[in-house]
Image 1 (cartoon, rainbow, N blue to C red):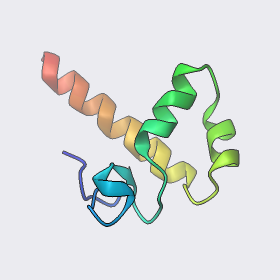
Image 2 (image 1 turned 30 degrees about the vertical axis):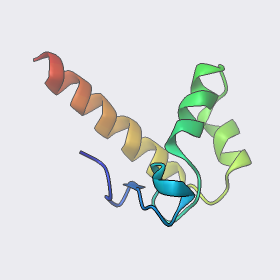
Image 3 (image 1 turned 180 degrees about the horizontal axis):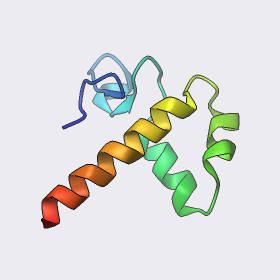
Length: 72
């Protein structure tokens, strides 16, 4: 689970407990919304400069691993 990791954090004191990129106030859901709308990772990063490309890549890699583990 990624919650409260170097990638994602969730605290009732930050955005009411919504999972955000660690060290930011940017909800992880915002990245997913961008991708769902056909926007690129670079578009997301341009809009949210407090999130690093490394954080986005790490999130996607970990999510992919967890999905694969669920079906194997």
